[in-house]
Length: 360
Image (cartoon, rainbow, N blue to C red; front, top):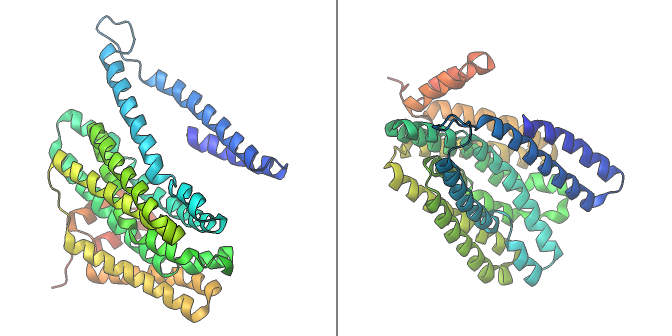
């Protein structure tokens, strides 16, 4: 609620500041002010919620908990600093040195769009960390393993059509929005969207390790990814400019995902990947991408994109129903959780697209 309130108010203030001529500096000043308000407000709420009675009944936070939180904060802070290298466009520094404003603009546009899309799997994974911590405290390791496996499978499945759409019609959408002079964004977008499902899977692994308190593993994974990012950027950007920057970022993201998934497996053991189900989901996503591409090719970038989104949804739904893109227990969980949405249509879809609902 704090974020919703300050985000809404802050957006209005940003618009007013820009309209008054405050420029980029004014916009950043508003964002800094919103951050201060968020910190003060959430800090006040946290102090109310986390006053723990000690053995003397004094109502103060226990000393051992203070030390544990301080250690965790230090490790997570170092981990976040390293994530800035992987996730916050350190490649731009190399583009500034070796390329120019055009390449920086092309890369920044694509990076911002992909970062916005990644908020979907990050939001989906946000609930995993606290749930894992609660189950870990209760010793329910089997529930952790099952829940994490389901989260990874469903995240990858959900990102398949989005990835296909980004690859098939994303370049046309960028040309429509920014103009034909930005057609150079196409190869950059194709590179970065190609690894999108991998990035989505790493979000679940990151949340799992955070919930288990495996902060050292998070730090080491991000350190390795940061080193790969800087190394690849130094090698690729001088010769390939923005495309090289995109390859460097994607390479680092893949290394980060591999390290996080490996650490997750060591922490809780192997999970069911349901490779056949994921392959069928990728085929359904591909069908959606092809349907959208055909619409754009036939109707042009304007009407084609609008029609393409509808045909993509229909194609994904039809192929998903035909190929059964959900594992039986995952479909049952989805039906129980969100099956009542859209008048029960969501529950019918998950049930009909379940691998346990095979025709005889």
